[in-house]
Amino acid sequence: MIKVDAQCRTDVPHIFAAGDVIGAPALAATGMEQARMAMCVACEVDYKDVIAPILPTGIYTIPEASMAGESEDSLKSKGIDYVVGRARYMDNPRGQIIGDESGLLKLIFARDDIAFARRPRRRRTSHRAGAHRSRRNDVGLRGRAL
Image (cartoon, rainbow, N blue to C red; front, side, top):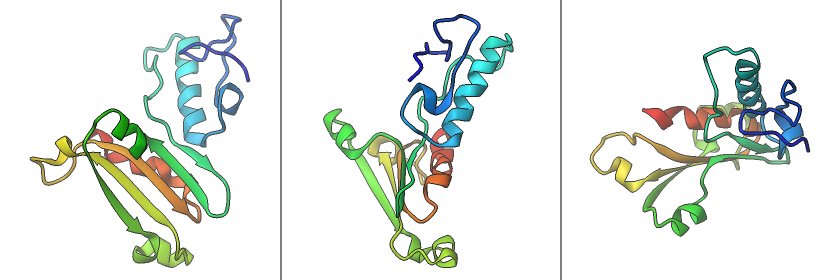
């Protein structure tokens, strides 16, 4: 592993690193986020100087698995009251098209975020398991900033 600071700068000030070489293997979206930030810092572009706080990770097994955000155990240990939503892929069009009968999407919301709203405003985490699930976990995060 190559050691980098918070802006992906190595011990050599003008050399940056991003992606799997600086940490655990992750999805392309994670490496791109790190590289975007490093490029902005290196080229002094005033666009991005911090990495998004939650990035997706994936495991390319059969079935694939991916997650972004905190786990139920993590929320329990912090004393955060939460609500879990689950959807089976066999019940949605994408799962039916690819024939995924065992895949699962799990979304976790802080209960306070949904208490007075029709739609949750802040998703805490997204977990997926099933065929081709590692590639699309970024979609699970898109609703976080509503």
